[in-house]
Length: 389
Image (cartoon, rainbow, N blue to C red):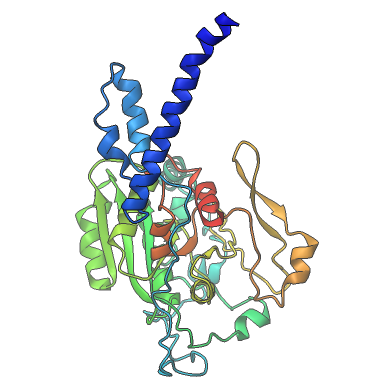
């Protein structure tokens, strides 16, 4: 019994001291108006010997997140309540793209989204050029360089409900900044992506296209690129002087963005008809939505654009496994039945990381990206978690 007391007395003192400390913290919190107590102010005073280990802890602790709920997110573009919100739906004239596509030659290489087919056998120099381009980019740059930067993708083959869908003016659709990160991207694919946005995104919603260079080393992406896009007015080039990775580059674009919505695209994609309006419409309805489009594929060898069709329904969605690897799964039957029509969105556990839209305010509200993630591949799961919690 005496031995037990010798061991329990210090424990009681420790518990009592801890209780008093918590009471003091609560009292300080109450007197400070319920605001979180700044952690760095007292944590920085601690002395330590194992500086490297504690330094890592401090780095993680410098931006603490408390369990208390976040303040409500205000809708920055909500229509005023004084009746000034225009009635009806956006017209085709209002939804005209920022730039009209120039006349197309149906016989040109890859026209209307078709496969590139070389005329005759490739010479030794052409074959070498093709092999070097494949080694650099993992797609057929030889074909890409011979396809028009302005190429059309042919007829609109979306489901008729998608083609006919109209978007109400109230609440108004928000504006967007399209953010495209690149590193040593091929000239033709990067510029075709830019023109694809300009030829399809309605001018009234497209605030800008931000090309964020993650320290490219090839000459054509330096002064030549800046000189070229200067004539496009809404296109800006931002640069990281050191290669810090995809996430750092996206965060730079997000900080510089002037639009109400951030739309992230890969540097080698092409936009189909009516791709942007549904993304903005969902965010206008619910500003805390993170929304990703249907993603058709472009063949890496022939650059054929595999168009969406009326027969292709939204039967797959993103998911992830216990290793946090992204994949696709069939949409559950219950989810299919809950859709009102083919224009109705599908809820998904995870999104593909390369193409999605999110309110800029909400992006910052949930903490943006983890800036310590230097390599691509996990940002889609991270953003899916942040948007769901």
